[in-house]
Every structure is written in C-alpha cells, then in structure tokens.
Image (cartoon, rainbow over all chains, first blue to last red; front, side, top):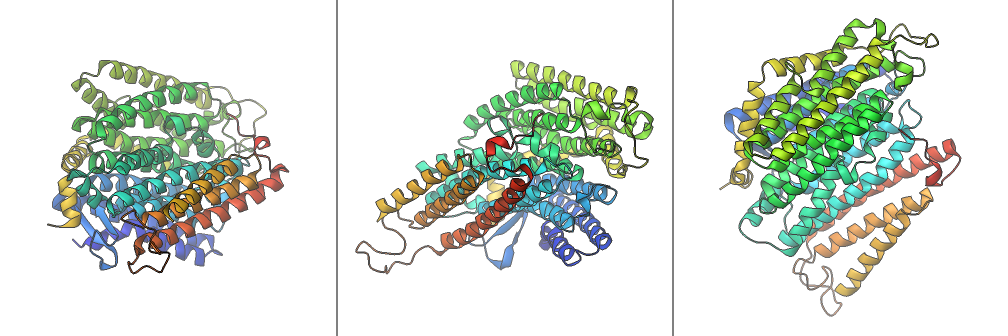
Length: 494
Length: 114
C-alpha cells in the first residue's frame, strides 16, 4: 500500500475543480467530472482507512521534506474516519447536484467550488501541520461563502456577508493561536508541538494558544457563544450546499477540538473538557428549543444541528475513552442523517413554485409523495434516536458511556433533550406529509431527485442494523489517540 | 525597536477592531483588512525568535549579521494572499448587496429573520 494514496482525497477534488473551470461552458461534462472525482475521493479515503486498520498510522511528506521542516499529511484512525464520513456525504451531495433543478446549480463555478469545499475539508482533516490546516479551512470557508452568495434564495447574499465577517474572526483567533505556538516552540508541526509540550516545556504563550485555537474551532462548529450565524447561513444555502455545511463542514471544528485535547494540550484537557460539557449542554437546549419554535423546515434542521453538535461536545467533554468513541460515532451518524434530511427537505421545497421551505407553505406538499414521506420519517426517527436506525446507536453509546462515568445530572439532561428531538421531528413530518394541502398551492410535476437522500437513509439503516464495525473502529481510534506518542513517533520517526 | 513594533501591532489591531464594528460595510471591510495586517505584524515579530531584537536589524539599527527566520515570512506571504482573496470577495459581495438593498448600512440589511 503506497503512502501516496493519502493525496487522493485532497488532490482529486482539487484537480477536478481545475478541470471543471476549464470546462465551464459545458455543464454536463463538468458534472460528470464532479461525480467521478467525488467517487474516486471516496474510494481513496476508504482505502486509507483500511490501510490504517491494518498498518497503523502512516504519513506522506509533501515534496519529500522531512518533518518537522516540511508539510506532512498524516492519516491516523481519527482523521481517516472523519475523512470517510466527509467524502461519503460529499459524493452523495454531488449526486444530488446532478438531479437538482435550482438555478444556482447551473452556474459555471458551482461544481468547481463544491469540489474545492471537499478538498479543503479533507485537507484540514489529513494535515499534520497547523498552518496548513488554516490554509485548508480558509479554502473551505471561501468556497462555501461564494456558494451561499449565489443561492436561489435572495437572502443568501446577506447570510454570506455575515458569515464572511464572522469567519474572519475565527481566522483571526486561529492565526493568533498559530503565532503564539510558533513563538513558544518554533515549529508548526502538530506532532512536534505535542512532543515539546509533553516534554514538560510550558511557555506562557502555549496556554494562550490553547484558548485561541479553541475559540477558532468552536466558531467553526457553531457552538454556543459563536452560534448565531449558523441557522441563517445553513438555511439560505442552495440545498446540496446546505446539506454539506450542516453535516460535515461543522465537523471540522469538532475534529479540531478532539485533535487538540488528545494530541497537543493533554495537560490542559480537563479544563477544556469541563467547558465543553457546559457549552454542549447549552447548545443542546438552545438548539432543540429553537428547532421547536421555528417555522421553516430547513431552519429547523439547522437549529437541530446546533443541538446535535452539543451532544458530540458533551461526549468529548466527559473525556473518558468510551465517551470519546461515542462522540466519534455520534459525529459520523449525525452527518449521514442530517445531510439526508436536508436533501429531502430540498426535494419537497423544489416542488413548490416559490422554492421556499416555510412550513406554512410546504404544509401538505408531500401528501402524495409516499416514498419521500417514508424516507423523511426514517430520517426523523434516526435523528431522534429510535431503533433500529443509526441515531439510536449513537445515543445509546453516548448515554451508556455517560452512565459508566456516573454523570447522572448531564445524562438526565441529555436524555430529556433527546425527547425534544422526537417532538420537533414528528411535528414537522406531520405538517409536511400528513395534513391537507392548501388549494392555492400549485405543485410542479417534478422536483429534485431523491436518489442521493435515499442512498444516505439506506446507509443510516445499515449502520443501525450492523453497528458493530463502526463501534469497533471508533474504539480502536480512541485507543490510538490515548497514546499520543504513537502519532508523534509515526510523524517524526525514531 | 521592539517596543515600537509592539505598539504598532497593538495600534493596528485596535484600529482594525474599531473599524470592523462600524455600521458602514465598506469601513467594516477596511477594518477586516487592517486586522489581518496586524496579525501579519504579529507573525513578523514572532520571527525574532529570541525575543530580543527585531529579525532584520541588530541593536544599532544596522543590517543584522544574524539571519532572520525565513519561515514566518513564508507564512506571512500565504496569509497575505488569503486575506487579500477574502477581502476581494467581501468587497464583491458588498458591491452586489449594496445594489440589491440600496444601502451600505449594515443595520438596514436585516431581512434574515427566523
């Protein structure tokens, strides 16, 4: 197994984007290239995960420069799991784009930007160098801002400006943190920083850097004090883009937090963990209650993402190996559920002439769509954590690991919030699919294709019925993370 | 020299934050760019690794015999390119939205409500 396989998930989409720009005049070729790149990137990331399982951590030195001097790509199990999740949802998103009838999708820059977003996310996951992570995150942010700005929804422009300012704040935090780390250690390689921190060296600036990086990652995944941009930005995006933003792009911040607490700042981790539990609980309740009172189907799902990220943060914050594994499982399962639900909402709203997702106008639109209704129902149950779907597995592993720690208060709150999820999902399903349609609403004969969400819901069902492989892999990933010296040795050698 | 550097960085940071919080979107965008420049200053200061003198001159303001750290300058170049790109994108978005909303006042661009 060649290490250069690691280049695939990053550079295949990037190459596809370049090719897509050259073929800007021909939309069909562009979309075919997009689909091929998405599938190839998925194949590469799965191959990387399999190689990881059999051979442990492996690295690729870009340009042949030896770390810590050069830029290094590292595939450990954590990065590989997140990358498989990202490429799976991205491939499904590209499939959705092929069957999408939005105007924005036919813009010549749409597919290249979509692929840039994928490349940025995969790069941020695989890189072992913190400055390169910043570059990839910026690639992702800029691509997503443009995609939201050209949305069919006229308010996309406003949300894009808002988000660009807010993400600039995140970038500022990240860059200041990187500068502080460089001032303290003179290196940007995460393994090298971890080695120096573990050797007992604790410059004053290192703790400031920890705070800065944490703020940046919390902002990227829209956690409580930095959350206000998220519902606007995710709601106004074109459906396939919104599905990506709300499922996998927010996971980049979660990945950063896990990486930070398990690799670099292990000494500060207990303090960070306590903070994450509190922020996660606030997110769970804010998000769930916000979802209950909103009147727009997409906005409801965006609020729900805010709540579900809270569950993941609580899992990270409890801090034991079992809860960390539960957080990883939760992150993966949530990506599949949320992206499929957003795509299904998109197919429903594409049936109406106004292409809106306000519940008052799409109420009853799904009346005659039996298949879509069934898929949405399954997705809603999965989000609420009802067996036999994958949402149940993630909730059960999380709550079980919490009970193992005897954190009764937080476990109680988490279970209570799970009930709210069931309330808002069944309410929405009733409103869209079960009530009588208003006479005034004219339906289009054809909407967006439901192939992509159907595949994702199928995946949810499979992951719910055969959950043990994912749990095993997550446990092995946590085992690997529990010993940072493995990562450090794999990158730096010796 | 170091004091001057710290003062300049701090001043630019303050100016950037002040401009960013203005209501006029163009002024906010300028604040955005000033902030990124101040971070570039911070990176440049970080390059003086021993923290005693600035990287490119010695204590007597002569060209230093000690080479400065080249990595931070590469980082600054990257950061400049990225911040320039974001700034251009931001100005483009503001141009389009000012035509659509007929205003540059960020308080009056408030149609997003849930």
